Length: 187
Image (cartoon, rainbow, N blue to C red; front, side, top):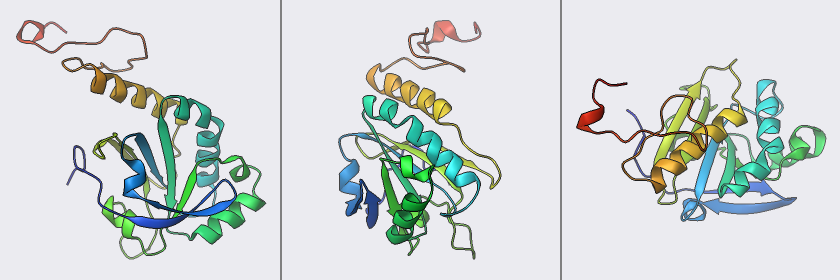
């Protein structure tokens, strides 16, 4: 079942951010764009490359009004230890959410059955708490922050320009489409 255009389910969790343990919930996402970036586990291989890529581009995400929530089924304690011991993870300024119960991972329907780890899932949630974009990749396929930023810009454009859509490879400032009867068969 697709989660596109569904509202995220309520959650509360412990997280690590800016050298502190904090409590986060679905209420923290209301009124702003949010990326939920699920990954299998701390202290692994592809995961730190993805999280570092997000960290290297975090200022761009924040300029777009987007907050990042990196989520794994590890604890917030594990996130702190990883942050303190890895140069790549030490760059992170965004929220690292611990989900040892799997509640959030199950809410987003990306828990690996019988394993207790999340798949590589990326979800863009709009300011109303509705999922606008999702992508799930296999274990060995890392994600790209620049491509994610392009998709966020497209989602934000569409949200603020009713009646327009962004075609394939659309980049900010390029021409969009206005679907209509006159456009049918002319693309």
